[in-house]
Length: 176
Ligand code: ADP
Ligand code: MG
Image 1 (cartoon, rainbow, N blue to C red):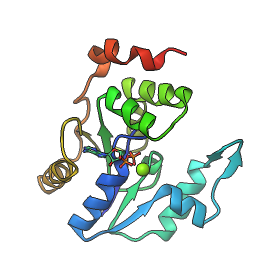
Image 2: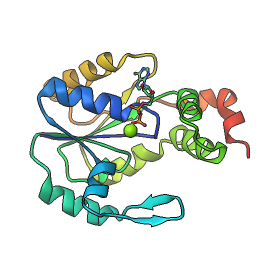
Image 3: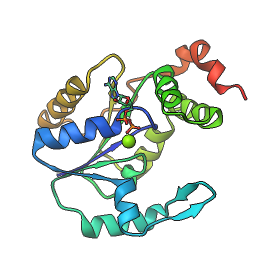
Image 4: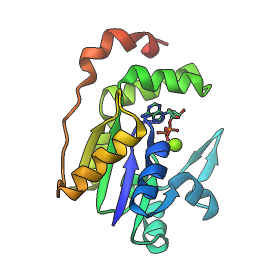
């Protein structure tokens, strides 16, 4: 089956996707690499803007059946399951700062995680959405949780985190 691994930047998508693909014996593909290889998206300033309809169509025609798709746009691709990785917004902030993201970008992504932005997008695209809270878990534990849920026939599990009670800890990242 096709599994999309989505979530806010820094949440652990690439780490988990590669490990999960290995665990299942599936192909691994990243939306970003795929878009570059297939000339999808155009440069706008210092960012690449991807037309998600074009991405979905070309990926659907090109990728295999047993594949893990890594990326914060992967929920736009036709898949059997969308896994939305979640992490405490403070962890997201710390990882993005470590990655030298600009203050503004850190703030935008912390806010996105706080308000469930990717989850909401994923729910607009697919019925089969499974949220996984990665906070305090190793990548291996996260992969086992995903495999367990899929093998158990779980098709949808949403609304498992609420970061609003973390607000006081992350408000500093939201100020501009
Ligand atoms: P994404 O692809 O969502 O941006 P990455 O997989 O690149 O996220 O992970 C971001 C950073 O966090 C990396 O340095 C990675 O090693 C680390 N990381 C990812 N998952 C975990 C985890 N479960 N526990 C601890 N560190 C993690
Ligand atoms: Mg990544």
